[in-house]
Picture (spheres, rainbow, N blue to C red):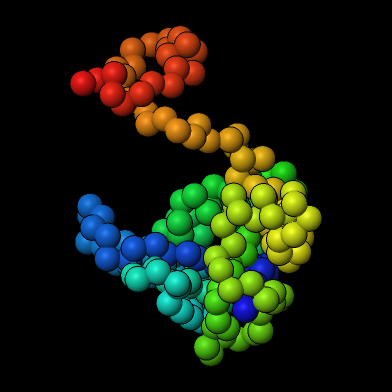
Length: 195
């Protein structure tokens, strides 16, 4: 079963990946999160009532739920989530969903409920596997797939940002200073060309 938590106006939902990853100036990703949250609280930028973390499905990954004393506008909440070290891919997609008015803009999907959280989850589904975009899109196109994912996830990352180039590995090229011809940007190279 999967538990779906949709960010409310007085909540920040963070997906902290690899909290032991080294980060210059902060030590680790987890220490960066804690220092940035502490700085926001001490400077009066965020009025926080409660912080609850729960292990994610991967080692050294955590979901963090921050309960705020007051509601914040959607874009401001998205910016705080990014600032507080939430996964950057998730944060970019959340910001684009918010900019395009896609609701819900921000949510977390978990395999189990969050112990001690101030509220219950918003939705559940009977899926046991991770809701990965490619399999979900293919399943929905075949008339199957998770209805909760279809309803709540809205747009796929490809609909938001464009489809990724599959089957090729980006080769390093030297970008010129000044105007960069679009041909250089649009060129997809095979890594083997460098050897």
